[in-house]
Length: 196
Image (cartoon, rainbow, N blue to C red; front, side, top):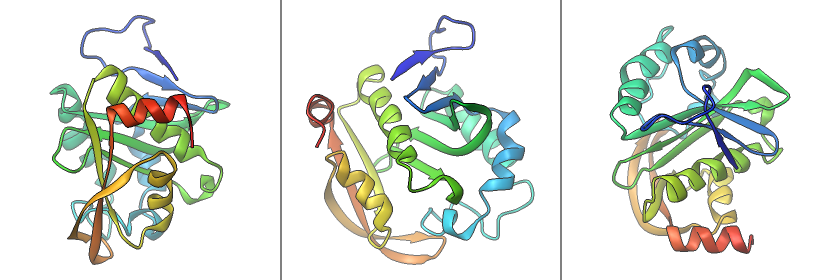
């Protein structure tokens, strides 16, 4: 993963661009609202997300989220949101990956169905996770998942995360058994040195 910024040097507190072999992760901006509004309101995308996501998704849902949630959180230094784009098509948003300073919920992500099954989300979440541990120096990363969300669970298992807590939570699809997955900074760096 490489860090870069639009000006070439990173300002203190600025959220950098992240790059992987195939992806460009660009800090979320108001300019992303239209693309998100086109892609995000899809049942396959939203069903296992928190009920903080309104459903049916309103026509201004993406703009409201970016303007009222993401940008203030980014400005306060407690949230980090990136649009996911293919390096070969940097103008095309295909998903979002986020980090948050919240108890038991430090990472969230979605990818439009058309781009699933290619390992792109693993690439995007690995880049964000590396930022969490290497740049933000956080001791652990936790993430809630519906127990029946098998693709998301598989992604976490593939990078060495483990379930540390069970509870029930409300999702767009309804109230479900939930697993809290965790990886520590130490385990993450072991994974990076010796991918499973």
